[in-house]
Amino acid sequence: MTRATDSAFVSSLRIIVVEDNHELRDILVAGLHYFGHRSRGVGDGLALDRVLAESPADIIILDLGLPGEDGIAIARRLRENHNYGIVMVTARGRLDERVLGRESGADLYFIKPVDIRELNAALINLAQRLFKRAQSGWRFTARTSTLQTPQGVTIHLTAQECLLMQKLLETPGTNVSRREIFRALNQSDDIYADKRLETLVSRLRGKVKSADTTSELPVRARHNLGYAFLAEVRA
Image (tube, rainbow, N blue to C red; front, side, top):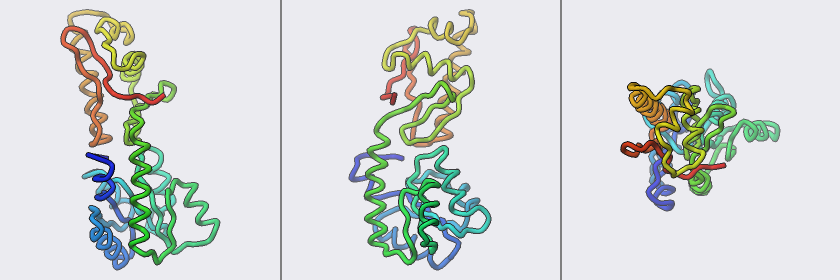
């Protein structure tokens, strides 16, 4: 998520409405536009994936009774690797259905029909919570070989990428010499070592950017010295 300031961010959210009822979808999209949000509408999970591949979102609004993959399955899938706000707007109002929606990863659960003013207020409050959560920095987990961006997007690392991150994050913000990195990677310090390391870092930057277009890997090269990870890291 791109945020200049907290107040500027929550006043214009990127929202995708996943609803197979064309009339209701158009009403929600138009209503959210009225409140200043950049809202788009799609009819099912496949269309949602296509839209997300083109540009990211802050909040996903899901109906439950969708064709193909239902809203519960979509919410679970999104929650595994992303930090989108997930809001369910559905006609299913039984207690067990609401509990299932929450358990699948929904942040909010509304029963149709929903007043657009109430929905907008709830979305702004949710975005503020997400904004605060995203300020906690990057997270690296060696056990699962994963790196999580400040937006909550999880990047799965190769063995070499994991060793690199583990070495750099021993002392975040501090330069790590090339020789130390070569040792951590179990690579010899030969004439090709610098090129191998540059390629490794470049590919990891590209992997992060591809997974989360709003985040850039904060690994910086120090000329003739080494590399440093220059960002806040969560424990």
